[in-house]
Image 1: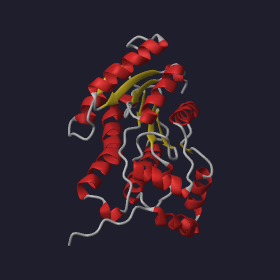
Image 2: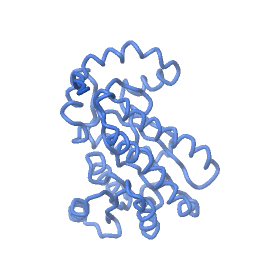
Image 3: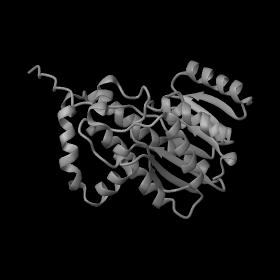
Image 4: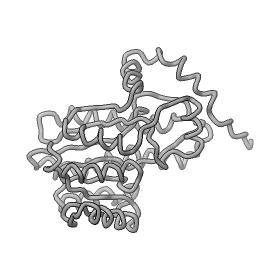
Length: 269
């Protein structure tokens, strides 16, 4: 779809990738509805974008929503429908880094609710509207870790593997209709999304990172191309292909990264 024809609902708009994506989408001619949990941050972001590009609220607006609540997805879907959304970008997400046995059960539930269940419920709520349009797109922003499982990211990878599976299955389910479903998988990005421990692990393992602007530019091209799936960065794209063909080929090299994980938290029992 041409960006000038896109009216984009962007979740996680105030985050590192979200801010860069909003800027890139507006520069390419799209209209953007910024969403997130903080009204103050969203209002400030929208005003800054209006001033920077000389836009009106018709081109950039915002709605606050907590997609982890029972009525959050439905309420936001109605607002996006009334605004005229024809593209939804599921960009909101939570991180989870560390040894799996150190992760609290409540954190695991919150991670899966945000990274997997919320995009599914929002998509479900929007589908009646999107299916009536001549053309619409649902873009799931996942991760290279939605195709490659790394030590220290068991829970996060599970959420992104699930998101990728959802996008793949729904794309096939809706084939032949007006709604195109896509999965976009960036590698590590230099944002506040990664805490100090995750950044130390990335540095110790020599993993490459992209700027949010690089990821946002690739996302814009991906929307225009309407490709089914795309991963960003080399050698991650090669690793994705190898992992898909023969997952055990990478076991030895990737398992070695486990020695860079933080020490296990001593058990209290």
